Image (cartoon, rainbow, N blue to C red; front, side, top):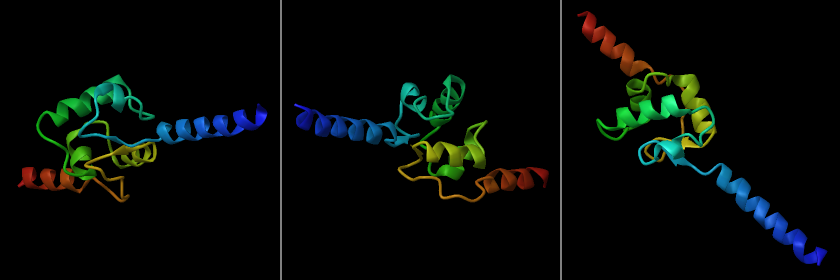
Length: 108
């Protein structure tokens, strides 16, 4: 009996571990699905959904630009926890240029 239970238990554990880190795409996830990503609570998930009403996020930079409370640091952490944007993981770097570009245009 133990010979049978050990492999079954190992398979169940592996399946659970794999699903615990399954990707959640910001363009398709419900509020509940967004909240499964470590660090995203009800407030931030609501902001993501509100920004998404204007259209799908084209990239991480687009999401960082449109969602208050998400910067480069949070983007990296959320990506590590399984969040994707348009199917892509955070590629690193600074996702703030779009905001700086808008500020420069507004100052002119």
